[in-house]
Length: 146
Image 1 (tube, rainbow, N blue to C red):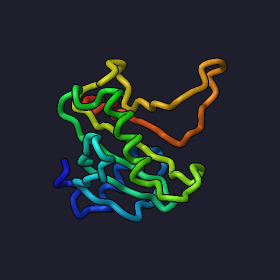
Image 2 (image 1 turned 30 degrees about the horizontal axis):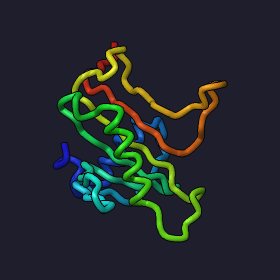
Image 3 (image 1 turned 120 degrees about the vertical axis):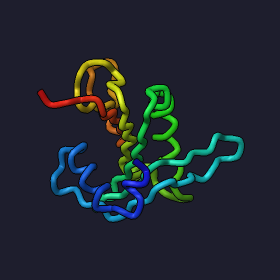
Image 4 (image 1 turned 180 degrees about the vertical axis):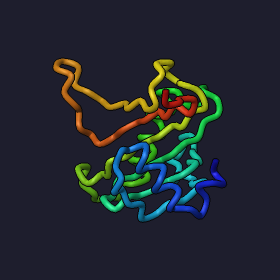
């Protein structure tokens, strides 16, 4: 899959348009096999595909054959690593771009026969959206339209 995305921002754009349900989404940059800078003593990451859209949103697309590689803690780690990668000294925290970590899995990770599972943080007391701009999606590669 990485080879499909390599040097093909138009493919990345097409895939993101479908997954995000935004036919007008425009990818302005796309890279494969992106190494994120390490914070001293932390685990490094090599992201499969990193893209930026015309509104400044950042996307990390991870293609996972095995469900073990797409666990919630890994999603959290990727999300936070993207925040670190996209923050700069003196930057206001409200300037952090919205991020999307997208796991495309071979099988239905949650087993509920949905095509896409959207994970977002909520305020527990009233289920309102937390609104921090971090998003995790699971795309079920096994899903077929009936």
